Length: 149
Image (cartoon, rainbow, N blue to C red; front, side):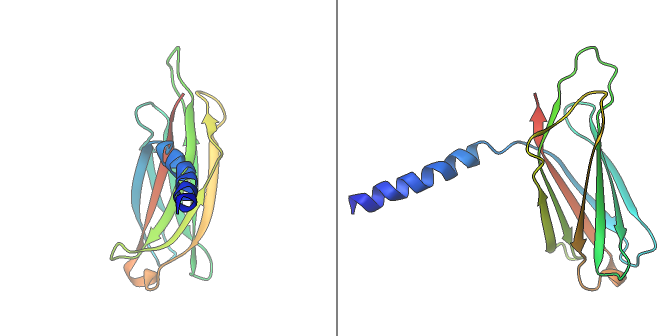
């Protein structure tokens, strides 16, 4: 019995440590995409609390079953001193018109630095679109986790 309790505590400890180190959610963007394939959806959000930005573009791929989500992180500033933005995790999901998630992908950039006035970062993912997206469209949700150094 004691061995089981000790084993349970040992197995739970790493999970608790991981949960404590989840970086803060910096962006939770939602954009409505046209499911017909004729129009691309675009968005831009500031990565709070600084001036870095995330721009996104969603377009339907040939065949009508999938959508391509392209992300562009940029950090332009005139400040004399600026901290790096750390991008820790990117989660992209597609929701049907009722708000039910039907596809999700996670990008783990391994805590990449987005440096002020340096090269931008680009990521992309292809996801399956919801059924009936051609008539009702769908929602693309992009969540970015990270923080400033």
